[in-house]
Length: 286
Image (cartoon, rainbow, N blue to C red; front, side, top):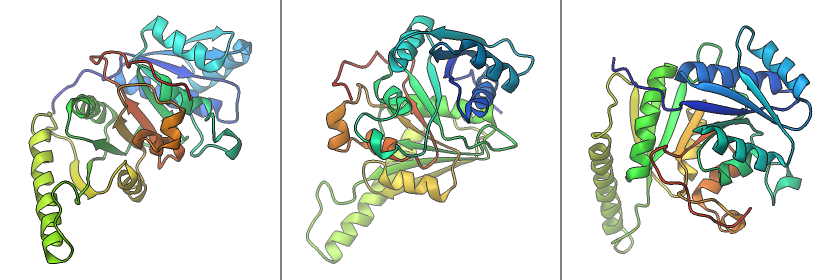
């Protein structure tokens, strides 16, 4: 089996007193341990002593640092991630936003929309035998997805995943669809075959040696079918490439594909931003 360097060098885990705080801390510890990452906890508030007790209880015998900062949580977390050079922010999240948060979104989702680094949002699924059993990676055929696949292949090896599903969505109707009936059906079949070859060529540039990979091409758009597929597979984690800019309020109203995922998770989510990519350009707040 090929040995890969861990995809994340420094995990910054968000922690606050809550019913799931211990589980969040434990999963952050499992993630950092699997990836060989440095682990730092960040708490925005003045409950540092309580948070340290939670971390010590969840991760006995470890010396994970707990940083306490005053200020607005989103600003504190993003600032600390930049200051420490963390390449992954880890946070617990609800599977769907409560109605009263429908406009501004929860803190976890705001981090996902605005961070300049990868964000892992956990909905407290804890496989008993390993960090991730089933990993679904939603791709496009572009450089961002190539960086995503390289990191997720490394992650899959380190985490010992049992199933790695690579999912590609394509629109069978565009471009060049003909009229209704048999001609259209023939066009759609030809388009599907063409896309499968395209994805195969793309994945041929990624080292997937020894991994339990299954590739699926789905007719659809905007990650809708990818999310349905993740639910059907009872995935533990869905990873996609994050957009190259911050997501703003208009993206929520106009249905940006990434925001489609953030409305309701099919499982825990990883929005991937490569360390080799330039920081996203500024965008509207949301």
